[in-house]
Length: 207
Image 1 (cartoon, rainbow, N blue to C red):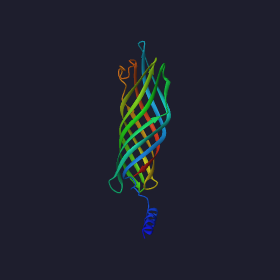
Image 2: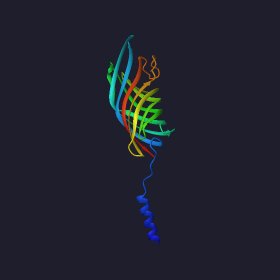
Image 3: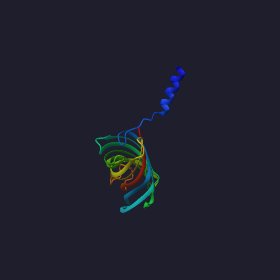
Image 4: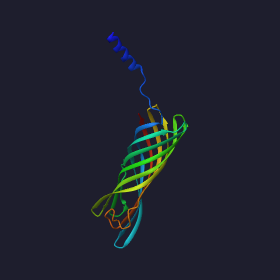
């Protein structure tokens, strides 16, 4: 009898469906991959002469996220997400003679507001806070600093199963200016500002 009960329980466990999360509701973890372009507007003063230049760096953007969605009703979703990302792109001496700059990790906390165009399709807008790390090299000096900024974007997310969804989104970010004195980066002759364009695809797993 005990053996029969054990086999019956095993059969129920195998035949029962796996726990299914509700699409666009509750916690999730995700990963993203796509194109990222950093743009630098730079002013360099050397020997009393100021030169202005701009440069762009295209690269592979990658990252991870942790978020939570609140399904307010049958058509509206409100969400909050924390993320971390990086890029392979580098700004080299093309920006200005003797100067090279590299963007490092980026941290972000964003909110999003979405509309369910279909039960399994979410169209959304997002925005919030970002913090970027940047490294400057000039005449042998190598200094890294962090800058706060903001980001805005929009995207679409498609539920593939109750637990898995895929998304495609665009985001624009702008980081704070590095002061004219350059004191915050230790390079007195540099003034710079970074902006960023991203197109990313991602996968979210809900639990």
